[in-house]
Image 1 (cartoon, helix red, strand yellow):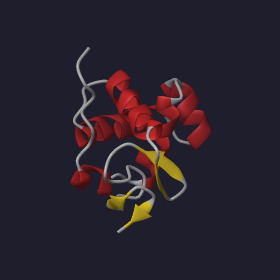
Image 2: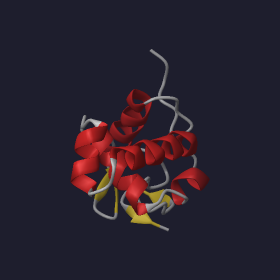
Image 3: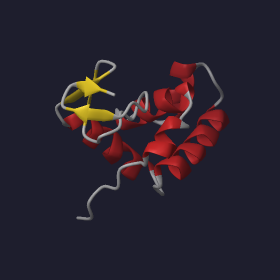
Image 4: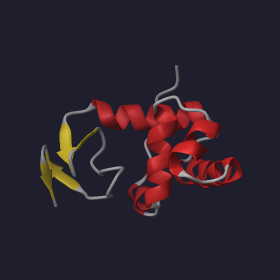
Length: 103
């Protein structure tokens, strides 16, 4: 199995709130149709957001995007109420300097 590439700081800071929301729903295993219904947008709009999200995360499919999301959630660092794996919070882009501390 290939290691999961984590998104760069620059790409995460450019994620829109909608992209973050869709990324989370995707990682929970929801279909595009369910994501569209949950976010009150057209299914085609979800596909558009996913395409942009894949580019920003440097992935090619929903499985890789979900793996990045879950890997980020698996670690013990805390920022904006979310556990993260990387030195940068994938939700708000804050740089983590020490476990639990945001700089």
